[in-house]
Image (cartoon, rainbow over all chains, first blue to last red; front, top):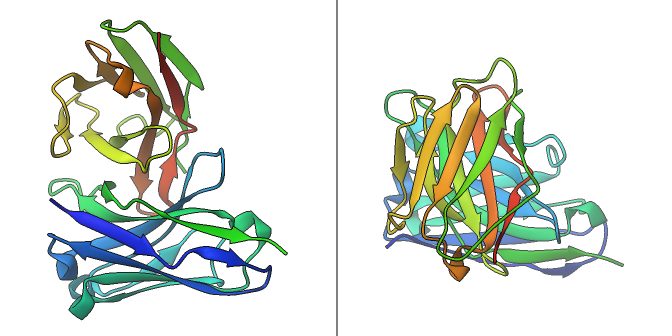
Length: 125
Length: 112
């Protein structure tokens, strides 16, 4: 069974930084496209960013609210996905989930097909 | 950019069936969507990928009580023989190569 385990969340002051990790097991990580999704307390789900596999270029893409502040990276030797959060704002307070990205063979459509349990980031002075 | 619209809440009785709706915005009626379930205090879980044809592919271990269907811009999630464990928030999401992912606002399902 595919497992995604996030870590690295915590309390940080506005303007601070944090790095989240997501270890993936029972999955061909090096071929996977991966993503981060967040959920503010009592709110809905919001896509944060995505990284392609290295074979597909390893490129990243980000949602507008985090572009220029957050960076996604991966270490395929460790089956680990990272999310570097810089210049944090109170609005970034949320549970952060890593996900695998499923790709429909016929259409190329992307969707989230496995989720981690999440790690909580709280930005407060 | 596609927009997904969901009712904020729904309720149904134990043992009955319920049909949740996710509506795609104009011009996006043929988009594939995915349904996710989020039980209280837990992470989301992928339920299924649902095409405009009504064909769907469920995630590993998802009960036969969950099924999907489509009509025009509407994507449906039907849960039969409702159980208390089905009480959860249900989110639809879709993807676009230009704008990436969007989520619906979620439907909170109460089992009476």
